Image: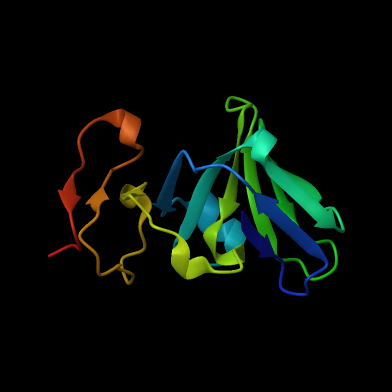
Length: 141
């Protein structure tokens, strides 16, 4: 059982299934929603994610997309897209043990900030992994 919570602890969650994937996203939308240079998302089956204590609030950030956050402290928690009805993306930083997350790749590196680079050898995709082969492995040279 994997657990997590918001900053103040009002919203707690758990999931009891293997993630479909864990990816580092550099898109502008995710950066703005989390006020970070990059976000790490974990895709879990919708039926495996359970909230306890307070329920999160939701914000429709774009057509077909809603993001959850704690209504008390504002911590961002999840991403949901109507085209992916069977999965929910959980922010790795909200896990009780975020060091346990194991990203598999970087996506939307075409939108990556010029002053940020992650020092790992993971594949980098211009947009998504569905768009083909990675444009490189590891940091920009």
